[in-house]
Length: 460
Figure 1 (cartoon, rainbow, N blue to C red):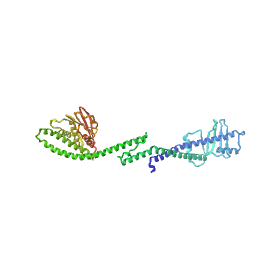
Figure 2: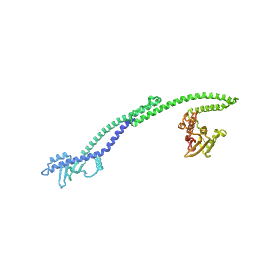
Figure 3: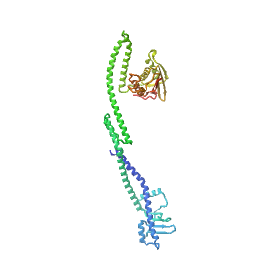
Figure 4: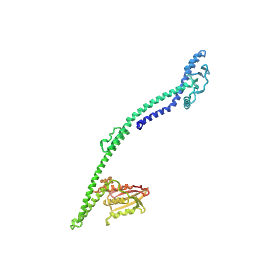
């Protein structure tokens, strides 16, 4: 469970990366330590050889020589001066060198390679080390040194680096862990806790997260989550109210339709009345009752849960549009209908639903005073576009803003605004859409889009 948290994983990664960086600097550090080791011994050997040079006889007895060589840590010390003079301190039995290291030559990669070789060996080679004499330009110093003490010193230095690396990595990781806990993990736990609490009861306003006032990404996340929770809570409340309203409307609608049916039966008798006044107002009464019944039907259709049943088929579009004319015209008083639809253009859709959408648009145009209707269809980029244009008085700005919102998008007094809302639902259920292209005082144009038959998505 510990390593499932973000802070614990970052703690382990921090330790790992710090140790990795220490490993990367370990090898050059050891190489540098080796060079420093040689420089120190060359400086000590140079001082010992100066004691020999300062002797009046140019010689030192063997006990003094052994003492100087022990302080240097070498088997022999040789000082070469630019004038050709050579001063040598050596033990009675000086060993032969196994390897020579000239510190005046080489570069960093070579020094690193030789350091690795020293660490990897287990024997004790005799090293001949040649380097410049400190504070004596032109002079060089030669030393005969054992490699085992150098190796031991290098490993001791490496252990110290390892111990220091562990301490640094642990301190760094602890600081990073605490920083993450304060800056990231605890705020994230607060956010996730608020999300969990909100999920249990989204309608409870007290379960909305209170922003901490931070101005970084966490603060923005808290603010956005708070706004999202409030939006969801309001949407759920509105949905619950609409569900209750829908249930009530359904019940009222049922009773209202029964009342309207009775009113229609009674009003039918008025058509045969001998009174001129009664016969004159009877048609308007019939129209009012018919509109009331149609409004009840549309309201029930819209309040029904789930999408309308979809029965797709492939059919030519032009004959379907030609059926619209007889349905909206009444003798010679109907609008003139112009078709610009290729006879070979076919669509894959629910024929009844598409007819319902087209009929609704045509009836809306006639109610807006249109005397001419035109239907234009074409296919491009796998999409069939059908434009329905009229020469009515256009839609008012408020109706255009709420065109597809039920109960808001009506362009005439007493309208429900359900027609276009239902039309959009029907079109989107078939993989298409409906939209307003333009609406001015000279007329209105709507556009229906449907996928071409070969690209139409299958529906269950």
